[in-house]
Length: 190
Image 1 (cartoon, rainbow, N blue to C red):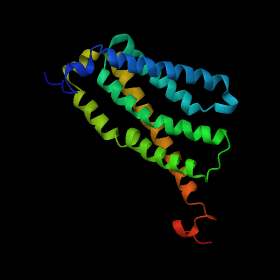
Image 2: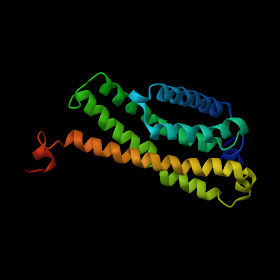
Image 3: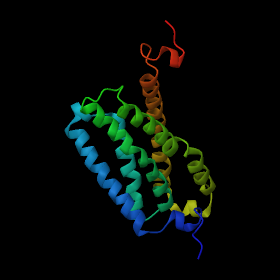
Image 4: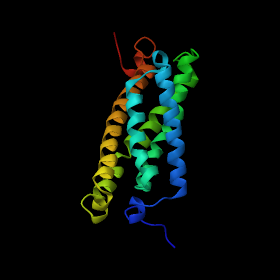
């Protein structure tokens, strides 16, 4: 039997065990990380991370409690493939690894590329699928609460991802094109 097309009812409703497991593990991580952010606010605190975690928990709560939109939930979870690189960057900073070290620069390059691929480059595909649903009977059957829990967090997460991508690119540029160390490589002249 062929796999269902992502725009069949299976993509909007259903209770696949692996999706629930993925989302439940992610929610556990988000809750734990949120508690750490709040407990160690002076060291870890970042209001954008708090916003990200709360928005994601709100949306994923519907996936877990109502079994809706499993395809889209897993699609969103792919963005977390960038998280190890983001966390590794924080660990390098915490242990005092020089930002000019090979490890930090390699991780910065990987973080930039992976973050772009899994959070930014997929935006058109995600919204093309979402728009294909808009106005359909299946979309209407979701109900207003689920529609809001799907669309509003999606848009909020895109804004956060675009802000973070800007910061990552800015940091990447600074790391690879410091005026004193890389004048020739980056075309700067004083």
